[in-house]
Length: 107
Image (cartoon, rainbow, N blue to C red; front, top):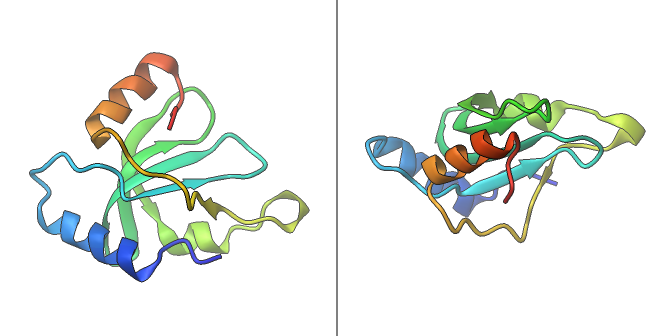
């Protein structure tokens, strides 16, 4: 599965042009065999920005390479997945605050 649809990519690129705003995440990615989750808002080139949680209890805002995520091969040959049913109901900073309080992303 492609991690970015054309619509998501366009939205994230437009968000990157307005970095002063607190955007709602346009994309949720997850590891189907682990605890990692990404809520991403912006995209410049191959690099996305958002809330990154590697499942170690320390979610943080940061950047991640989309191509690196697409090329990861996980246990049982699985790949990082896009949550096709995700719709953000909070801004990124609201998700980040909740994740810091609980130690993980709950979306």
